[in-house]
Length: 369
Image (cartoon, rainbow, N blue to C red; front, side, top):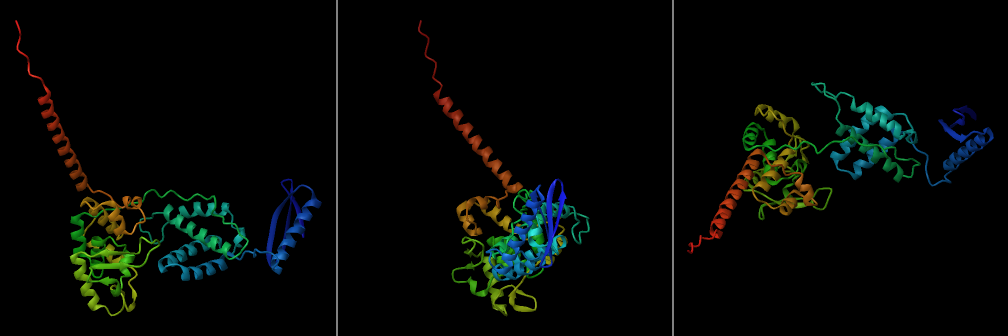
C-alpha cells in the first residue's frame, strides 16, 4: 500500500491481480485517503469473488478478439472486415491497456495523431481523412457498447468526443459519354455489374449477391432480401438489357450466385475494384468516380425522366424521400433543360399577360362639342 501527496491531494497506488491501480483519493487528510484506498480494494475483492454485478474490465487486446468474434456472428462480412481493419489501427494506440484505463482524453489524442498520418500505400503523400478516423471511432464506440452488454465495469470513452466533419460527401454523376467509354473499356464481370447498377439502382454489394433463385424472369424482377432496413429488402424491375444478360448468366452459373467468386462458385464475388479503376484509366476519364456513383447516376437520370420521388425512393430501397433527395444530382444538361423550360414558361406568361392587357385597354370615346 502506498499513499503519497500530489497537488495538495493524497493519491493511492497498489497492485491487484497483476494490475497497477492508481487514483486520487480526492482527500487532503491522510487518514481519510487511507480509508478511501481500503474501500477501493474491498470493492475490487468483491468483484473478484462475484459479489458485484459488474465484472472487472479486460485488456483492450482481449476485448478486440471477443468483439470481432461477436461481429462475425452478428454482422455482414463486409461490416466485420471494416471492424477488423479499424481494430488493427486502434491496437497500435491502445494495445496493452486495460479497457477502463482508456479515457476520452486518450481518444482525443488518438484522433489528432491519426488525422496527421499518411495514407498507407498512397503515392501522392496524402494524409488520412476525417472520414477514416470517424470509422475507427465508430468501431471503438461499438466495441465498448459490446463490453458494457457483456457486464464489464467500463464507461464508453467515445462519449463527448466529437467526430470530424465529413460534409455531405462527394457524389458523382456519370455522363452518357463517360458511360459509353467506361463500358467499352470494362472487362467482365464488371461490365455486366455496372450495367445492372445503371439500369436498376441496386447497390454494388446487392448486385454481387444476386442468386439465381432471386431472379424471376416471368415477372422480370430481381428480389433483394438483404439490407439494414425493411425498405432495402425489395423487388426491382429489370430493363430489357438487364433481363437478357441475367438470363445468359443464370444459364452459365455453376453455383447459387450469378456473379460467383473466382475459384469458388458457392461464394459471391467480393469486389471489382481493380477492374473498375483499370476501366477508368483505359477510358481516359479524368474525373474518377466510384462504382457506387453509378447508383447516384441512376437516381439522377430517373428523376430527370420524370419518375416521382416516392416511387424512386421505393426502387432505391430508402426508408424516406429525404434520403432519396441526397442521391439526385442534376447534371449540367438537366440544368440547361430546366432553365430552357423556365424561359419558355416565362415567355408564354408574358405573351398572355400582354394579350390580356391589350383587351382591357378601353377605346377612346368620341369628343362631344
